[in-house]
Each structure stands twice: as C-alpha cells, then as structure tokens.
Length: 462
Image (cartoon, rainbow, N blue to C red; front, side):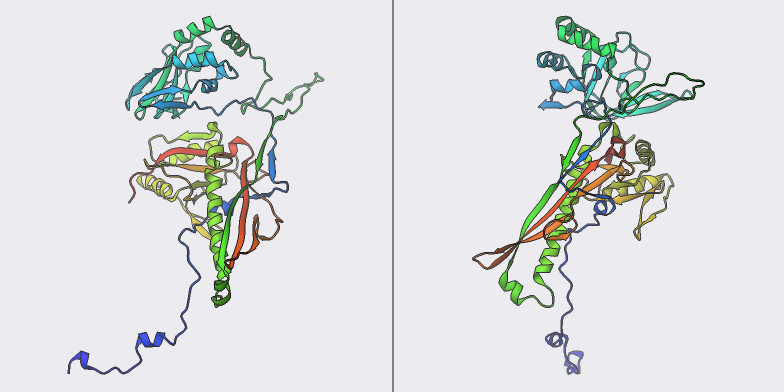
C-alpha cells in the first residue's frame, strides 16, 4: 500500500474551518507612521483661532537669500532680490535695481575652482545661483580651515559696494559645480554716478542712523555695569515689533461616508463606523504632520531663519555637521528630526569613524542619539531626486522660547484634542456622512529655536 492509499483518520483542516470562528485583526494601514513630531511637540491652546508671536524689535530685513530666474542655461537675478545685499536693503527704485541686475555676469565653476583669494583686493559681488562654495581662511594655529559654506541663494562681497579698499578675508573655493553671478565695483560705480537716489541711499547706509542693535539684530537695551560712585545711569526701554506675526490655525478635512446597510448588518464583532473613522483619523494625523513640516505658510522647513541654515561640509551628514547644528541651537536643544534614510546615512558616517553613539530612552522607546540628544525619524521630510535631505534640530516649548504646536481644545463634537467629527446626515442613497476636521499649526517663537542642516547627501538606496 502506498502513502496516498492511507484512509483519512481525522477531520480535515478545510472542513474544520467551516465550523471555527475566525480570529480577526482590526483593519491595518501601512501608511501609519510613528509621528514623533506630533508626540514630542508641546501643544499650545489657541482659543481665538490665531496665535500672535510678539518679539523685540529687530532690524533684520528679508530672508537673506537671493532668488533667480532661469531660461535654458541663462540665469538672472530677480531685481528686487538685490535688496538682500545689506547696502541695498530698503532701496526700492525698480528701474535702478533692474539695471543693476542686468550688469551681473554669469560664470560656471568646476569643483576645486578658486573664486577669490585671501588678502587680495575685493572688487566684485558674488551671487550663488547653484552649487556649494567653501569659505577657507587661516585658523588660529596657521593652518587652513573652513570658515563656512555658501550655497544656493547665498552671496558675499557686498562690502565692495561701499568700500573701494576692501580685501578678501577668505578664499572662496567651489566644492561642487557652481553657477555664480558677479558684479564688478566699476560697473556698480557707473550706475551710482547716474542715480541720485542710489547715491543718497548709500550715503545713508554709510552713516548709519538707526537705533543700535545687539548680536541678534534686536533693538539694544542700554544697561550700565561695573561702575563706582554715582554716575548718571542710562535710560532705556524695550522696543517691540509693531506688526508681529500671527499664525492662524490650518485645517485638514474629509467627509467619511458609510452605507447604512453596512453599519446595520455588518457591525459585529467590530463596529464598521468606528473602524472607518479610526483609519480616517490616522490619515488626517499623517497629513497634519506633513503640513507641520512642509507647509509654505507655517511648516518648519520654510519658517527656519536663513541664518539658522547650514550645509554639510563634505556631502553626507557627519558628526561634525551635527555639531555645527548644535552650535546654532545651543540653548537647551530638544531633538533632531530626520528622514529614516538620513539617519541611516549619519550612522554610516559614525561607523566609518569608529563612533557608536548610545541610544536614549524616549517614552519607553530606544532611539538613536547624538551628544545625548534624540534623533527622531520622520518620513515627511522630503528626499530629493538627487538623494539629498535635511536634518532639523529644535528647542521646544513656550517657556524656553522654542517651537510649539498650535491647536484648539473644546471644539464642538470634539473626538480627539484639536479634532472633531460632525454627523452630516443620511443621503437619499442611504449613506451616512461624517465631517472629520483637524485644526493645527506651528510657531517658531524666536529664530534660534530651529536649525536646519540642508542638502545632506544620502548615497544610493539599498
């Protein structure tokens, strides 16, 4: 007798399952992430639907970066963007600015090309349309050191517009292929000769005339110290911005529809409406975190001050780069936020150096860290087609003048904090409708609460 000839001695699996109760999971959703930003960001109650950030008066103007237009291979600076150069701030004669923009000459650089040399006479203004340039100077012990990195939208040499005896205080060398625009002092002087308005503006810039400011651009508070006897003490006041920024709560909404037949007949052992609602809310929370990162109005990537943005020294995110980021947000930094691929790239750089940072415990989870500061994953931070991304570092909370999330509690039909579910009725097709809304925003209370490491190269995936 062969094996296949053996008679069946027990009930088969297929037949048994017809009488067994299947154990089910609730509906699963691959799009659910850890959403660390929503979990660790302190949330502030916004009762009136808007949050006003009052600050001391600051004299900083513009975003610090120059914007360009391109037509094929030709790059031109947008004339009003020349106001980002300190000597031209506040100058609004469009005709003169357009003439200045037309005098810039486009140059293409290869990696390693030198643009300026330390100690030589400075006679040009440079605008970086694309690429990365190192500012190389002499260190305290006579060796060469990288003083800083300039990239897309950066500029240098504006002092030559008001000082014909200026010299270069660093060597500028291209790290990558670069497109730069340059304006010679002679071309600028030619336009000044023919423009009374520009000449008067530069005269006012040279003579100053505004109230003194501190290192952060804030109006100075005069204080005396170290004196003896009874000298006349300075009088002062703390000036405020007259037009502080207000953040209005944004909204993410959708209409959930469930047929009454499903809700009536297929509601056991799991509530169909509840499960539909749970997955819908998960999707809204994912969109909420995406907006907190990427929204052009209040998203963190777009609202970081440009003085708080740095670039990697060599390409991939290294321990040195994260230390530079910590130097920007040095007052009680809370956490790094990075795409999982960026965290992997940073870990590779640590391994190359024989560094293995200990993880830290955060809400019962072991997460990677640097200098004891958690590095939290966030897949909402974009990764470009050229495999570059950004790392955010922030201080959080109102008490520390940090980054805060904004929401409103006590909404009608509130289902979760800052989220409500409102029944909209039953249609003629017997379909139940629920309006699901989440209200939120984010605010950076002072610029040094948020720093960004930009254009970190992640290498090949896989």
